Length: 107
Length: 155
Image (cartoon, rainbow over all chains, first blue to last red; front, side):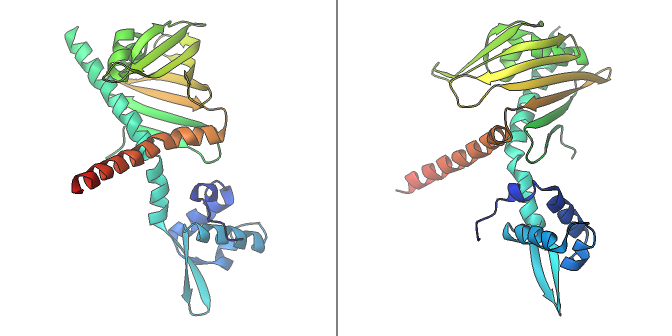
C-alpha cells in the first residue's frame, strides 16, 4: 500500500502526536521511541512509517542505527494551514475594535 | 508578538474555539454584537433582523459593490445574558454547509479590556474542516487570480 498520506490524518492519532513530541526534543532510534510506549513494537513501527510517508519524520542512517528526525518545516505547513482562517477572524475583530473605539469617542 | 486572535482546533473533532482579547470595556464589546448598525459596520453586512433575547432570531444579508446579494445568513438565539453570554445557531443560506452552534462568552479582563470566547460546534468533523479550509482555499484562488492577471499582461 503506497497511498499518499494526509498530514492531517497523520496527526489525528494521539500516539503519533506523542511520537512527534518525543522526536521533536531529540533524534531517536525506533527502539528508543518504542520504549516510551506500552504499545507493541510493530504498532509503533507502523506509526513511524505513516509519519515518514507524510514527511513529518525523516530517517538518517548513523552507523548501524537509523535515527528519526522531526521535520519542523512540514509541521509549519500544518500550522500555516489554519492561518488564513485565523487571519480572517483577526481582521474582523480588528474592525470591531476600531468601530467601537470611534463609537466610544463620539459618545 | 503574541497573537490577539487565537484558534484552537483538535484533529478529528467537530468543534473549534476562537478567543480574542479586546482593548475595549466589556459593555462596548457586547454592544458590538447587539446594536444592529454597529454589527453592520464591522461585519460589513446588512442586518435585516436582530432580536437580542431568548427565542429570538437574526438575519444578515451581504451584497457586493453592485448591490447583488452574495450571502444570506440567519440563526436562532437560544440564550441571551447581557454582557455575558449569547448562545445561537448560525446558518448560511443556499450553501451546502449545515447549521452550526455558537457559544459566545464575554468576560471583563480589566476596566477597559475584555475577552471573547467563541465555541463553534459543527455537525461533523468533516464539515468543520471544510469551514477551516475555506479562507485557505480562497487565498489560493486569489493567488491564482493574481497569477492569471500577470500572465494575461504578458500575452
